[in-house]
Amino acid sequence: MIYIIRNQHEYGPYEASDIARYVEEGRLLLNDRARDAESDVEGTVEELLAARGIRPRVRNRGSLMEQLRYIGHAFIFPKDDMERHHIMEDKRLLILAIVGLSLSIIMLLPIGGYLVFYAVSLYFATIWGLFFAYFFRTRQISKSKAVSTFFLTQLGVFVIFSGLNELNFFYAFTSAPFPLSILGYILGIGLTEEFAKMIPLLVLERRAREPQLPQTMVFYGLMAGIAFGVFEGVQYQTSINIRADYTTAFVLNIARLTSLPFLHAVWAGICGYFVGMAGLYPQYRKSLYVLALAIPATLHGLYDLFAGSFYLVSLVIAFLSVFLLMAYLRRSNALRERLRG
Image (cartoon, rainbow, N blue to C red):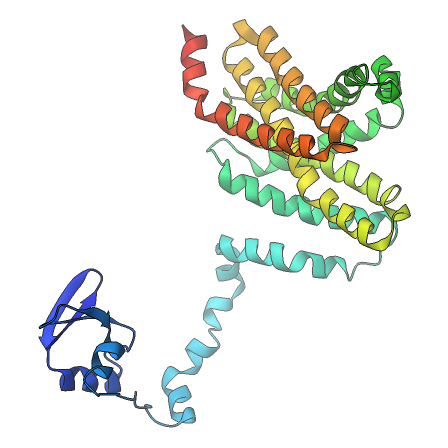
């Protein structure tokens, strides 16, 4: 006798011959879990039947054409469910289409040169945006605000890096010997670039019609960071990367579309966290705004400082950045209690 186990429940016991017949009829599966009633040995239906010298074969229910006719055309080509109004209601399908097919559409566009790099970067930015929306979504997140944050950041970055960044005195220290170069990378590169990403977040927080949750501002910070990463990535792909050999250029281009925009997003997400806290507790806004800029600028600057010669250190800083953002979010309620007191 054999027990059948399904969904943690036992059924039976049944004679081995009955179980073999059920398998042949398709009512039981060979890989269903089973237990021998006498020995308590567990295994699959196939294993326990084989131990008794029984090897059942599933019967085909009619010929191929008979099976297809039984399934029916409504299930093979579900026309009604493929109508436009059904497709537009299925968000999972739309997301899947965006992720899977957008790049194929871009290949058909009559564009070249810089625009190609930019279009591909936008494709990866969209994927990152969908990813962030899934992991950091709140009821306050607005698609229109996310898109406006993205392009407002790009506009600001374009203006700043059209020459205004050279006005930062500390840029000169990037070529100074260590440890003076730390000033250049943190106060020159880190401070300037993180401030460019911070501006849209300040605009969003000030124009909000309701107090923004820190996690909401983290999401918008992530979008601002991705926007910066897209801009910077296109700049590098069309200038520095193309001068490298094929393999190196390939790896660098992929990095400029994936990991490096992600890092920019994490740093801007940290900024968004403290900007959000400043919006909730304006009596502490001076210190919170300083933290919103100083922490990402320091992480960013140190990452860039060691990226050329001690990349392992930069990698540690990258992981530290991610851990910091998640730790801030975990302690969000505790900090709010502290600032509320």
